[in-house]
Amino acid sequence: MRIEEHPVLTFQRGEKVKFYFDGKEIEGYEGEPIAAALHAAGVRILRHSHKKNRPRGFYCAIGNCSSCLMVVDGTPNVRVCVEKLKAGMRVETQQGRGELIAKD
Amino acid sequence: MLKTDIAIIGAGPAGLNAAISAASMGAGVLLLDRDEFVGGQLIKQTHKFFGSREQHASTRGIDIAGLLHEKVKEYKNIELRLGATVLGYYPDGVITAEYQGRLLKIKAQRYIVATGAAEKSLPFPNNDLPGIYGAGAVQTLTNVYGVLPGQRVLMVGSGNIGLIVSYQLMQAGVEVAGIVEAAPNIGGYLVHAAKIRRAGVPVFTSHTIKEAYGDSVVQGAVIWQLDEKWQPVPGTEKDIKADVICVAVGLTPLTELLWQAGCKMKFVSQLGGHVPVRDENMMTTMPDIYVAGDVSGVEEASAAMVEGKIAGLCAAASIGCSTGEFDELRSRALSQLAELRSGPAGEKIRSGLKLLV
Image (cartoon, rainbow over all chains, first blue to last red; front, side):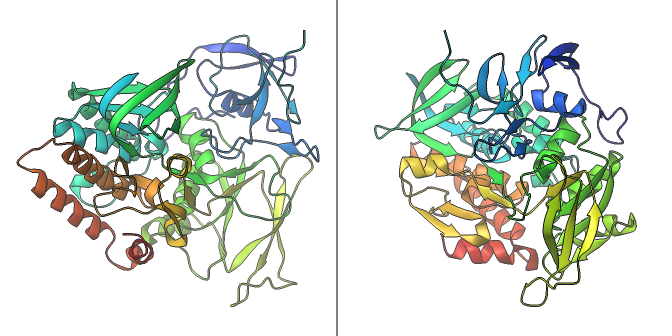
């Protein structure tokens, strides 16, 4: 959910853009962190842990803790709490460690 | 290879002040930050600061960041590079940074490390469920990006961050189910606690989380009481429904660069964990590395700003920059720090620093 009115703050938002989460089209604002756009769209599970397959969301939201790693446009282990949203991005839930070496 | 007199890593409250002070002494400054904006964590602080006028009292954190940025821009001898993540320090006194997809090599005569701190977590069953977030994360999401973390938040920790974030969540229209505090008393300032109490939020002192629960995302927590020996008391469990659990149990210094560079480190729990051994001028055991702000011991942003001034002044003086006002500026900053750390609220920091300086 987005805050539309706030007693202290006004929010500068970029252009509204479409992107894809696990293949499904959703909307966010260009330039905001991918995690913020996903959270606003109700997505809280960003990856699954590699040993026990437990669901994980973000924790610190400023790029320190690496809890929020996802696959973005085919690249795994992207910290979506600090990676900026661009139109048309393909964001996918990461399973385990992610495939580091590109397949031919 | 980029050459400069003083490279500053981190453009938060400490790094910005360090840059301004060093530049005012005539030093050439390269100010680096991994983010695309300056101010560090000031940008999510919508509350007004305390202290004296010199530390921007009664100005909101977010506005302080703007004021400092304007001041930085006034100095032609400060070069600001944003989106630059410093990667390491090498034995020949060179640092590397990732900047716009390239590797930068930087050689400075002095470095001021002002990397800040990271949020701590708390061990309890299911503490990894999505929806359990650090308090700073919730503040970032709400105050910087205007996205609500959820509808009903359980706050863990009643220090200043726990209290301030609870209040800010209510301002944004989120319900705060309660604040859980392991100690028998509220940790933060009375003025913040009073706002929470007036809003009718229950504060569960001498309580901790037994476990969080939820089917793939958090749906609530069971809390229980602690006795005078901090042991949980069976039979005192309470179930609190919440779609967010906000963990505000303190910060720990972000010291990776200092470890890697070989600075002598010491564990001081009052300062948040491992911190660099340093002198009154903020110089570490490596004569070319200075520190300022939370990386040298977790404190309020007001103290970080003053430490930044001291580090900037002293690093510049150590390479031969001078101004007639140096002694006066330095001793004024030192007495401001002493004032900020005076009284019962500063006792923890004072006892921690005794082990260090």
